[in-house]
Length: 282
Length: 128
Image 1: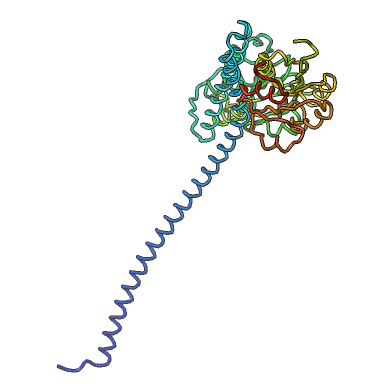
Image 2 (image 1 turned 120 degrees about the vertical axis):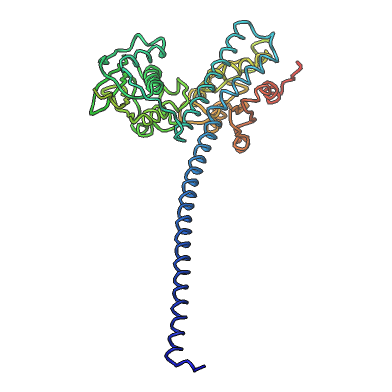
């Protein structure tokens, strides 16, 4: 057997090194690929964590709001219900039939307020969770306004209407109904007559505006008007207890239907509350 | 019970329902005579000065900008002989203890304790 030449040995060694390098490159490529996948997975997980964190912060805020509401708006009615019920139970015979009727009427009123508050909180939480169901239909605005006035009750006949019959929007009828009832009810509760409802077309939308002649909204409060639990300190709001959620719900419902809400001063006196919803194309 | 023996009460409370409830809860004792009501601090001070009450039942959340806790010293100055009972929806026991003008504290959901507390403050025999 002849001794391998230096050249042959060198060639073998080179070949081994080439194979080793090739294997190393393959391993490096595989590891790099795995690393890349891991980094991508890590980024995805990181985004999920960030999203979960945002959800958690929103949930915390909602919880803080709820606790604030629980301590203010729930405690009062519950104390009144408990107080009247326990006072009557302890001394039933001490009160006349008229007094007992009055006390039970107060209990009923406070319990109804609590029911409205809890319904509103549920709606707000659905809006904030993006879990609000929107069933779009073509709605004739004038008819929607007339239906809303039926729910407004005793003041319905006092409202001045200016709603062209041909105007139609595409929205969830229940949502539009709730916005309109809220606006018109507020106009009588916190504003003053005459109350006007006007519908008009504007750049692909139909705007419905509700005007009253009351004391209006203080400028410093106007910016927060559609925020949750916002209530202006005016003589009218002190007289009428509300949940502080109606306008925030109106905004959430309008936006879920690709529309919006806003407020303007009704010069020289009063307020204008408006909602716009997508007009049905002719 | 003669007028002279009656102890005058003033209720400072912004919610009508609670004014009705306080009257109902205290009616059992004819020695307690409700003579004045107010929904905000300034009127409460005037009513206290005019009626010279033995007891003022005071809510913390009032109409206007002055709270019950803030109104308490003004009420005491207007009616130095009056005991002041802070009656609120919230647990303000610690704040009430820190305010020398306030003689007792009750939460509104303890309304069944209102009469015994009033009697104790005024030194009235509950059985009489």
